[in-house]
Image (cartoon, rainbow, N blue to C red; front, side, top):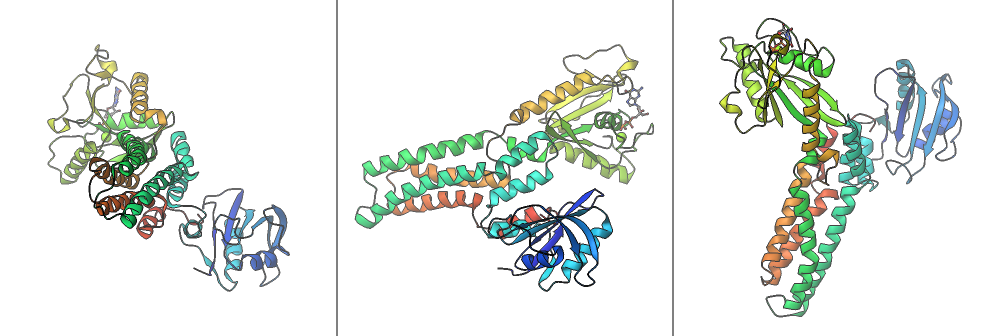
Length: 437
Ligand SMILES: Nc1nc2c(ncn2[C@@H]2O[C@H](COP(=O)(O)OP(=O)(O)O)[C@@H](O)[C@H]2O)c(=O)[nH]1
Ligand SMILES: [Mg+2]
């Protein structure tokens, strides 16, 4: 285990009244005592002057909190300095702390990595924490908090305990009988334990990608011929000028994304280049990207002008596509069964927004997902359910085979929380983690 004492500004880099510097590792008590004059009582916010040991100059005046091991975020001796938000304050404090032997700046996610390795959190809880830090909407916050608080972990562990119970029954057969198959009575007991677990796993898997959608955001692509009003619609929905709006055709060459919060539901709205055959190669790339984006979308808004309606291209077949007629103030046609008329100019967008909101709710179970929030969980649930099904479908199989499948089923569940394949997963999580977390 690392003996370095790590530190970082945990409150981000934008200007604010207060900044928080976090410290973790064996030198923490010594650093805090030296800089704050004395070691404050555990877990009590204490006002102190922070002194630079090199010059005895006061750097700032603020709060310091000391969290002795093991009752801290990382499980090590930890501390927080709450200082004023000026860049120079943080810079001087960092320089002073960095001068202590064994102290060095933390890498992204390093505090959390230590929390994980010290058993303060499990892998699923760390994922929940990462999601909570990234949460942009209410539904994302709620889902992330639940996972961070152990909802997925507890359930996976419960199931795994049931599997271990069944494993004990099977092991007993291997030890005490010469028979190749499990006797019917034991087999019945094993079935009674395993079937509910398998069914619960299948029910979670059947719930669709709701948790993943909430975590990642529903993808809605705006497509249509050049000049249809795609960028204008994106701007109107986002209520800020993000895409280039221009009366010239073919201005939006690359896909532009905005993140929207539709009553708590996260939506990623993507504006695309006009779909038409293009001689201009840069624009052709944009068009190709538009098609590619549309293929991965939860919904495509196919825009064309009310005065010149166009059907969506055949390549959109199979995608959920809504025909939208734009610039509706120039025509008499109202919204019909097969097309919604909108106008960004007159602000006639309410019906579209209401429908988008309904759509988002339908797709995301009103924001209440099951346990699965990542592909990783889905794969683990699948592997476990498949192994359990093999046992339940062939209870008369040789004992060794049953034991083998049961081990596979339990191992898959253990991957959710356990320290298995952890480096790959941590690499993925922490690559997007902030310094100081
Ligand atoms: N009158 C009117 N003009 C619109 C409306 N929506 C877009 N436009 C105009 O149509 C032109 C093309 O719009 P733009 O959003 O750049 O189209 P895009 O190529 O599909 O992205 C611009 O001049 C817009 O101001 C609308 O609802 N009414
Ligand atoms: Mg455009």
